[in-house]
Amino acid sequence: MSMQGADSGPPARGRVVGGTRKGGPQAIPSPRQPLPLATAEQSRGPTGATTSKPGRTTEKPARTTAKHAALPGRGDRRLYAIDGLRLLAALVVAFHHYAGTWRVDRPGNAIWGRPVSDIMPTWFRFSAYGWIGVEVFFVISGFVICMSCWGRTPRQFFTSRVIRLYPAYWFAILFTSAALIAMPGVWQRHRARDVLLNFTMLQSGSFVSNVDSVYWTLWSELRFYLLFMAVVVAGLTYRRVVVFCCLWGAAAMIAPAAGFRPATLIINPEGAWYFIAGLALYLMYRFGQDLLLWGILGMSWLMGQRELGHRIDTVERVSSWRGSVLIFTVFLLVMVAVSLGHTDRIRWKWLVTAGALTYPFYLTHYLVGTTVINRLHDAMDPRLLVVSVIAGFLVLSWLVHKFVEAPLARLLKRGLDTSFARLRNASSMS
View (cartoon, rainbow, N blue to C red):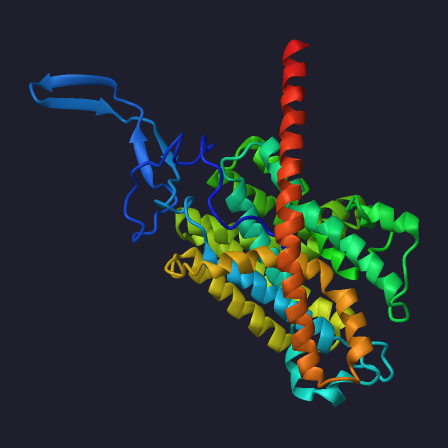
């Protein structure tokens, strides 16, 4: 899940492959007018021009090239609304885990002791839909990964993902493992060898269980990064990202039907269409809307609603398909509003902090939070308990971001930059 996301601020300045600037912004027509696919057709010069009379020139038809130009300023501003949406998605997922899953609604469950629908029925009805926050994360991840990768080299893309994903994740593994040792009886502890393998973030590929079950979304994110790296290597352009969306979508439909498990594993058909929707929305934000992007977004919605239904039937079991599709549709419409620039006036500084809290909050809230609820559910009002636990994890997430994520990310970046510099020097000498 793009729970971790990417920075929703401006990408690194410099050369943009297939974009509109090379070292600085370029004058472009007004953003009030959405640009069509071919925004500028420029002649390569007259071919075989002849002059019959002074002042009159007869030219043969000249070859033209079409260039998809970005809207002005669309690559250079932070999207505060995206930060807010990320935290909102994390919060609804937490409410779902604490008060809306089928596990907490079973008689004698290990968290509340009795069905949560008997304890707080209204909260349960609404929290039952909170799992959709994961799909929201995936859409946002497609958007912000494309945004933050524009103009970056593969090395920069790799570095940015490592320093964004691993520091908070490593802390979460240690924090959760220690909490399960200190407060046994709710969740089963993991073997030391499995905990150690979790530090790689590749445990799902080795059929090893996650220290915290919410880590499953990271496996989807990693496969998305692996596929998208091919476009980053080629250089991000409007055309290449559109082709990538179409090819990935086609593969997501064909691979499962063909029963080809290796391709299905890499292609990730369960999450593909959410990431594709995010990519299309970013292209709409950067270049303006057109029928092709609306078509990709529409196809993503159609395929996404099917995946929502499949997840309800096989995993969630507590919410209706109609309500889930309605919530997902409203979210996509909000993202369309972001893509069309209708939220550009939102510039509340606290949203930057809100976005920074999202990833550590998501990683730490589930197992430890439900264990705390198990210990305290008889000591205080259940609604106050849920709110208090969420507030506590928000405070913890701020501390993790400030004292773990930020300093460790700086150390990792310096180390990786030095390593890649040595690699380049060694290559040039050989």
